[in-house]
Image (cartoon, rainbow over all chains, first blue to last red; front, side, top):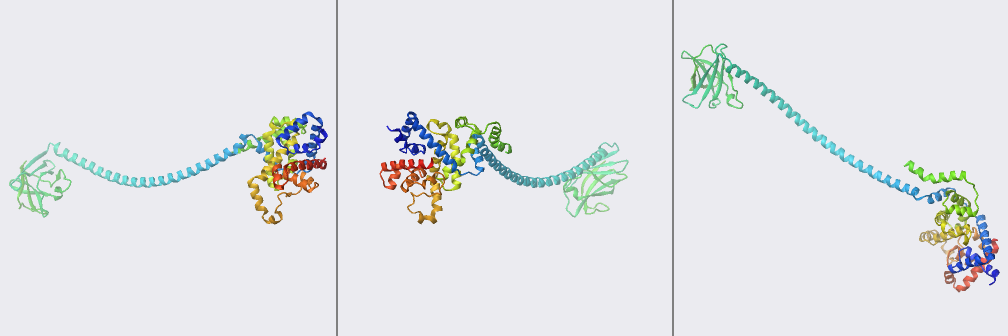
Length: 263
Length: 198
């Protein structure tokens, strides 16, 4: 074959410019190995083409180099912004979540605070009531202790147990009389509740004569019963009796006798 | 996050330090060897010395400046990725890079996205462009400038095959001439082209 003809056939340029088919390409590479002139022709054209390309260079903007270098940088360096991006998204999502949670907590806390405030106010009221009740109960207990001490532990106190009479045989009341201080105490064990215009009256009997020792308050028969009723003092007595009189009492007994007992 | 961003820039700092410690010219063999060893600095050197020439090659095929720059970026990424497959026995490094550039540029102009955008831009010129598929559509840059010195039938063939990437068979179909004639005319045109650039 004629090497010169082959070189001038355009195959060299076709090959260098990438316009040959794979078969032509393989054939040309084979020819280059066999014929140094063909190889030289190829290199000459390549250099001419390179020179021509450099002469006709179009300078890219200087910023492109950094973009290109970043594009070829190791994978991890390129992955980093993606990862930080996703962290940032996760972070903002997380922040939104926290904000939402805070709002819910705040609302919850507000509701809880209001309900606790109301509950606290009720508890304070109840506490105040209880303290008052306790104080009065404690006071009452002290009074009762004093009264018990006065009548039960005092050797000068005499007792008259008054039994029920005709109108109400089940009635029963007790009088404690301090012979030294002359104080009279009455315990109403059992008496029927009087009509609102009537009142029981306690009498001391001395030498057959009744002496007024005081009225029994009708409140005794309503609500909390007072254990020991303080009556009027009496200087001397052999027996005691209770009669039912008009409201406010009478100077001498007029109504029926409910109880009677000797000292 | 600031620390991580610094990491992104790290390879660039790296190549700067390399730059200070390394000589600034290479023989083609040295350059190929360093590139195949994935040396950062050799890549910077390659870019500095050939980006303009390769953008010229791309611009002769891709008219839009922005798109041509995008293609150039792809070209350098491809060079970096495929450098192992470059065989010096088959041609010079620049020849190989020029073919990488031409292939990327032709892929771009044949991509659907590019065709669509060109259609949109071309609307006002439609009348003057009717039946101009075989006509050079670009400003004359680089090798393309040489084309103007060729005979009309040669120019059309080089434009279609080299600058538009049509196969010989496609050209034969479009121009309604026998395949054998296409081949011989292209060879003849290229021989002539050689005399114009050497």
